[in-house]
Amino acid sequence: MLDVVVLASGRGSNFAALLGAQQRGELPIRIRALLSDKSAAPALDIARAAGIDAIALAPRDFADRAAFDRALFAHAAQFHPHLIVLAGYMRVIDAAIVNDWHGRMINIHPSLLPKYPGLHTHERAIAAGDATHGASVHFVTAQLDGGPVIAQARIPVLGGDTPDTLAARLLPLEHRLLAASVDAIARRRIALGDNGVEFDGHLLVAPLRLQADGGLRTVG
Image (tube, rainbow, N blue to C red; front, side):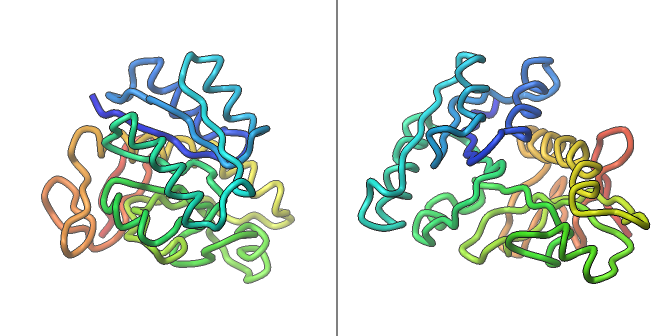
């Protein structure tokens, strides 16, 4: 059983999807806590309703970003997680903290990385005229949205799509992608090796692809 701590800043839809999969017995994980930088984040309410520890710290109460991150991750460490999942966590994390959790922290990002790190990914994909958009799960490094990519889900960009319609169609795939990635890590199929992401002991040459059945497959 993989012990997991989740960080979220907002509504918590990806957190709720992970929690639901755990509760249905679909994931061999135990979510130990939900941590947030926003005291009013709806994700906290989801955690409390499920009997999961929910902790919020306010960045303004700390001298700088590094001090806040040290405090937040000290709380996370009290739960002895094997994995930290950033599920809509909207702060850049101090590099020293990231290094402390190397290979044990993942993030879900709404673009086909390395395209469009940062914010406004749906707008940027439409503005660029992309035919395909998607989401990525990656290991967290000090580079913003720049860590090794584990897996991706893809959808077509349709004529007439707006950022809102594109985001709405992608969100259910984000949920499935995150659950599948966490499942693969929990079952020790995925790990971060010296040369990149390893799947079943073999170095990935391209991110895994989410399939219609919810599984992950190699590409190429």
